[in-house]
Image (tube, rainbow, N blue to C red; front, top):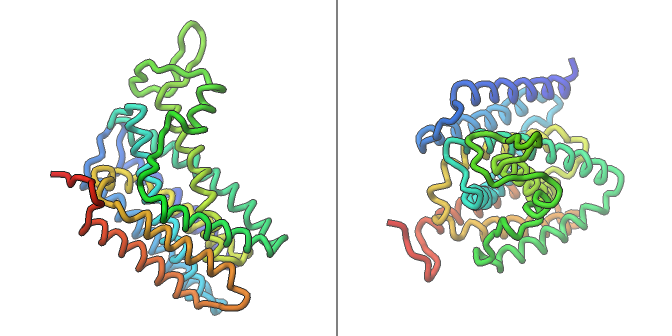
Length: 317
């Protein structure tokens, strides 16, 4: 059997088995996920992601196993760090719609599965564009430099406002919605008409908002894995990172105000990889350099956030 096909089959099987395990054993309907459970699930998804990285390393017998594993790991850590910042937007959305904790898990799962479908479409389009127009990498690079600078200077002042967001306005305009208490239901029938509840709106909003997130993350992952022939590495690193979002949400939602400087760490990473894409033709950096920069910037910003508080922001007791 072709090695690439084997890795695809293993990847698909791992995802299906993991989802069944996650849903059947680690999550129950209307269950409130506690911090300890969230930690177990987060460790589970991270372990699974690293195990797949090891599989890529040892199964790839064309001499590129080590290189492919580092590419995968770099892309995974990049997407995972971007996901942490996205979780804070998810927290605001859940608060805005007043979603009950018992419904968090199901709503997040459906929203994340929708996001995965969007990601697959974006990656497929991106690989086709890169394969056909190599110069598009310079556009990606310039966009990441712009995004990195904007994100670094913006700080946390520009808080996400669901009510004024385009996704919220889209749903209100084109979907028949109701503000009635959903009681765990996604659709309510009244007067022979079906209405989407707040839970449905949150699911759709999570999926649509991920389109905005993908605008940053997809060009970023192409900076780490520029070869369009390595689609498997791009797909797997992205999907593993997104699948871990649900448990990460429950783990971090009580500590949203303790990562004040994470955004600056992500901004520096985006700025670095954007510049790297622009100068790649003249200055080629080893793969491990990108991995090292990602680890140092993200871990450094998290540690700095824990040890320092922005001026004027009160500490939680």
